[in-house]
Amino acid sequence: MKSSTRTWLGVALFVPLAAVLLATFACLPAPVGDPETSKVDESLVGAWQAAQKDPSDEVITAVMQPWDAKTYYLSYYSLKKKDGAEEKSMMHFKAWVTTLGTATFLTAQPLDDMSFAVGEKNDKPFWVVMRPLA
Image (cartoon, rainbow, N blue to C red; front, side, top):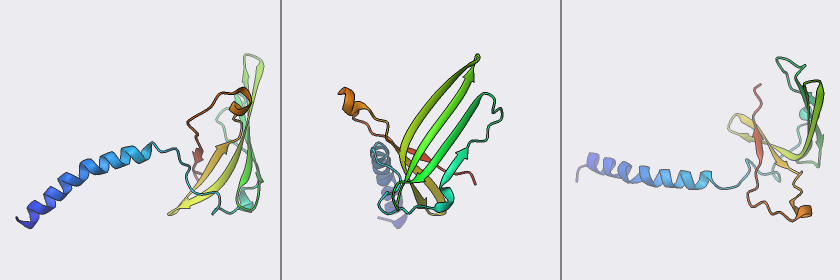
């Protein structure tokens, strides 16, 4: 068997296997990074307001406080004005910073799950992952 034939045969066998593995691992409920290996960056602590094109419609504010030496307590507030009425929403997260290569990500685990109190079980946990533009 020629070496080029072996190469093409290897590629032909690997591509379907890689597609199956990627499809399987993409469905795993797992956060980005590990909160136990993270460290609080003091420059992120504080209140942050989202830059809006038209701030009269919606104001979004995020307040980040240290939870412990590795993670943050993130409070997310939204105030929408619609037809003269104000709609307020608030969410709370446990968040941590992860660096992958040269990119930095903020992973946030929701804390507002009330299923334990009402008896509904949520089988699919999720994490919010954000990447700063700057």
